Image (cartoon, rainbow, N blue to C red; front, side):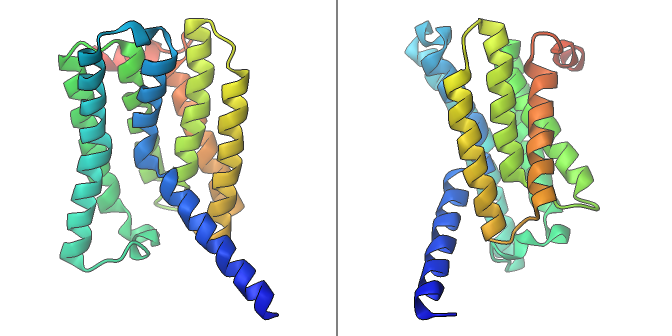
Length: 221
């Protein structure tokens, strides 16, 4: 392998790492709420209401999971690369799931509409499935988050009656780039990437789509 090829490979790996960091699974629910509050009819809601909702989502889906996982790593002396080991991922998963449960309860107490709380429920179900599957197979959480975004776009387009084609094109493209990055970094196989996307897509459709959101209503009774 020539020096030029080595430099090109290192550059590709750096780009893949940046893409993985930018589209971390922790940011998916917050991004979904941000899009919903800016580009749907919910943009007419008072600014204070938007800030409260986004603040709750940020605290329980980004700040708390990242903080607790950071503390867990420091206590055990783990590096981020260590958590790529399937057997060491259970505690971070459980910490994140616990935080999402608190987020869901908080939104329930604040009487947030079901189609907004459903985003958190879909993410929670998706993570539980990933934990169970992780016993035998390491699904890609990055791709599960991407699949959830695509499923959410389809569900909300049916709910609000808008054409999601351009949004779908954008996020399907991002999903492809992200999946490729995970493969370049050798963090997942092709099957784990596709499987993660499928899990996220199905969870979003089952919880958020108007034809199947009975799942959410039953669970919230």
